[in-house]
Image (spheres, rainbow, N blue to C red):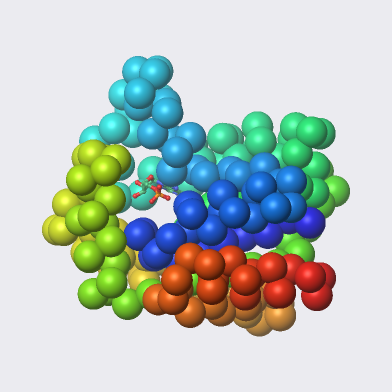
Length: 188
Ligand code: AMP
């Protein structure tokens, strides 16, 4: 089973992805953490993308496609991937299709965590005190939310038309959300 989890920044995607990974023995591809790692390691790519990420903008589709291909092409992860933070726009969704076809795989389920902007602001400010991410200020949080609405909502629509989408109320407790996700996955 390959699945995608969507939700605005601060929706709890990471937490739920961890839960799914552990429970179903999947591998998480979080493009955000892969990119942040490149910055930490001060690689050439890291230096190129640091200012983009810190401004809350999206890294180029081609850069992200290469990182995603490295992951999808790994036989150890075949049909065991949870995509977190990818695809973020329609072009990336098309790139993902192309890569999945190339490596003889498909998406089985798409989850969307639905959360209001008010909740997002609160959670991001909370996370800032814990993780100290440079892109977690209120201003950048709002920008990332707006980018999500503009670029990622059309991608979600795309998966809805393919009948792969399940929408989850992300305002509830972590445990309630875990339970709903398990129920959905048990039907696949
Ligand atoms: P995230 O951890 O998913 O919130 O991502 C943090 C930041 O990494 C985003 O604001 C973007 O700058 C960058 N990023 C993560 N995933 C992608 C992607 N699929 N396409 C472009 N940029 C991305």
